[in-house]
Length: 195
Image 1 (cartoon, helix red, strand yellow):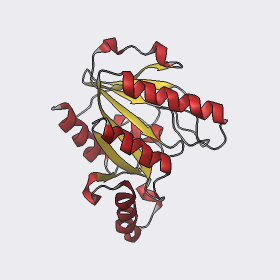
Image 2 (spheres, helix red, strand yellow):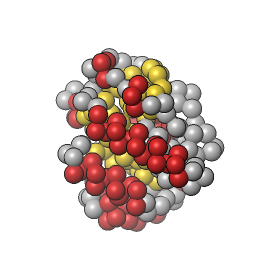
Image 3 (cartoon, one colour):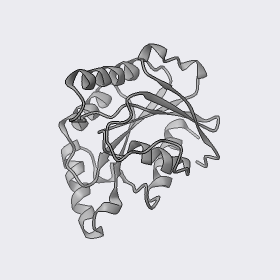
Image 4 (tube, one colour):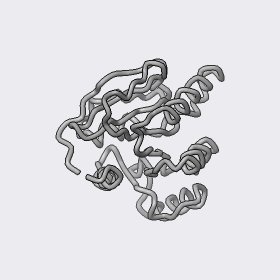
């Protein structure tokens, strides 16, 4: 898949504002607040300034829509598990994510981001179990591979695979800094969309 242009469409502060009238297939992105969702969007887009990245995790508090050519929408959902947010705020984000995943008729797959350096959190595992239960195709993407030594990669992938109960080959390793894994992510999206 060769994307020529990804552009920001709009942000939704409330799931009631969501309207899939665009009728484009949707690929949602979920993960912990500090996992690098904005960086992955920028890597896929080939534009480091498209999605705002921040040194402070938990900045994405909205549902952000990005259109890739006339092919599909990337749906950036709020990050979960941000400790500094109030419980009420975290619950609100969780409800927004869950309602979107239940509501969208155009949802074709979810990219679940996990940090290669850490074992998946309980919320990561719950998210994957939920998606599998509802037969939503999942692309598991391990971020920040540039932050570990090459010699550590096999062990880190093994831990992720074991804890998420998937095969090692089901995990795409990426680095937004170097672009590693970009083609594999695009290839997975392409397969799901039948392009």
